[in-house]
Image (cartoon, rainbow, N blue to C red; front, top):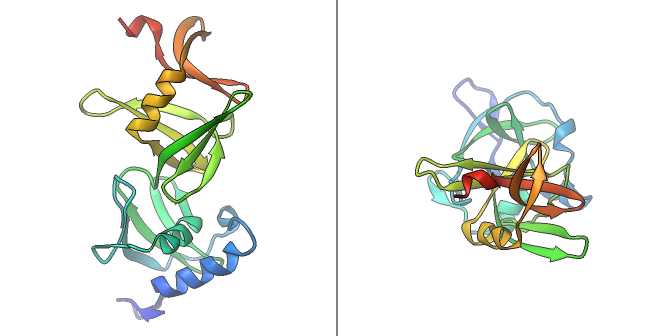
Length: 193
């Protein structure tokens, strides 16, 4: 730990990584249960492409990025790295994760894989939503875990579209995919023309 401007103790990345490592051995960190006092902002950000930066330099060690991602928490529009006793703010340009691939199994069930190797199923607890960027292009997002989303990369989204079918939804016909017994609509059929 080091002193910040108010002479209080500021967590270091080494301390946060060490705490995350202790919890990683026991499974996912229960960050939703941790509400320590805010310790200040850390010069860390997650770029739109999913790259993590510390002090303006990319963090090149994937295991370290995975550790930090395991103690990530979102409150409102703000993101924090938390331990049971520390909470530091970080910047996130879009969302903290990128879906880089998926697997399709019988059911059908779509299992997403993120840039930090986190795996989860597209289901009612992990819904998909579609926005459009400033160019009008689709920008698909999916909930990874409590209040934390991933943007689905272009190649994976195009693969999803190949699996899509037109189904009735909310009184209209929609193009979308089925996964784990739930239909996830992308676009109204009327808007495809």
